[in-house]
Length: 283
Picture 1 (cartoon, rainbow, N blue to C red):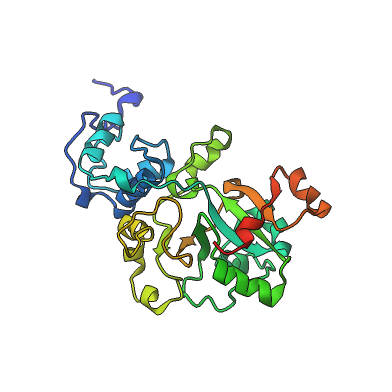
Picture 2 (tube, rainbow, N blue to C red):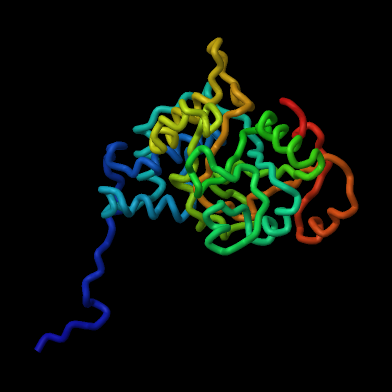
């Protein structure tokens, strides 16, 4: 009688390692948009070693094929990149009341929805969330939204706020070897790009899906005289609504308006604090 070795049953299905031709339309849209935005932020088109990339591939029509370097090149060949539109953005910014800082540096930057679910107390800027996206965090490219920031500082107190400098790798994927665990973070389908303030009626009429595209991302940096801006949005009110909590490891620095010895505890947690009056001023 023929005996089948246990290790041979059930049969192990091998993925196809030879690269196959792909159609971008059959790939998850969030994967394609990530590749474009990553390129325009970093110039990099190599295969990122991020879990979410491989997870997205397994959800595609090509899941039976292995996602390797050769296959990734096939994908990139199908895409169209414009090097002229590459950006020079070294930071995203978020302003918050200084009383929130201890919680943020321990738990990360949490959405209002997460804060409520965890019954955490927090001082909010926008209690009404007029843009209607409760599970999001407002971020700005290269400089805080000075008009909105000035409004809240006038209402609450000029020295009651701090500005968080956040790595743009939140959008393009982790490359920091000291934070390898961020390779498992899900970078896809979270950033809603708004050329005008998200609460603006024109913006709110656009679908969230439309505002997650690299085309809207690029449009933020287009001026009315057809000049391509590399670092700053054409409108200071432009923003990102980031759908999801932001791990504290993406916070690269905390900016304060004046020197204060009371910030020593922040250094003790391993974060850098610096006086930077520029981010508190009009751009």
